[in-house]
Image (cartoon, rainbow, N blue to C red; front, side, top):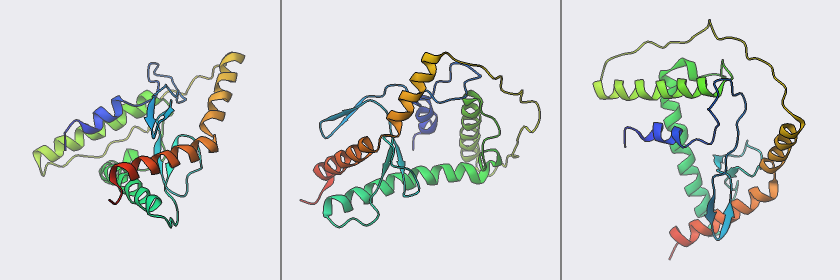
Length: 186
């Protein structure tokens, strides 16, 4: 695997980290086309515990037809690869095992980068141990600020778009067809 895979993945994140005090995720347009349908936001792979939101692609609990079975197989394989990679980091670094201790996205991003880089350095040097480190002191409180009414309306609009169940079902159906066309049984 490319040693820069995870840092490249983080660099392509849709989070707005331009301000160190950013506390909310700003969903940037990330257009892609699946099965002829254009979507403008990225997506996450999820399992049954996640909600049916526009940005979450879940598999089917008990598929009966071959197309959905193939989709379930491939979706779960990809999701497990991501979970396994994150599990390796969690097993090594206590700071990312539990809930975030900070809310600034820039700081969380820096923590993940540091863990990935240190992990790769340890792997390259084989056998050199590292000490887990966490900062229980010194994080300043997050300043509270008020946005404009327009910003709040934009937030509500984005929230409604993210929670759109019809987009979730359409995206999943498009992925089923796309995967079947590329990898289905001949």
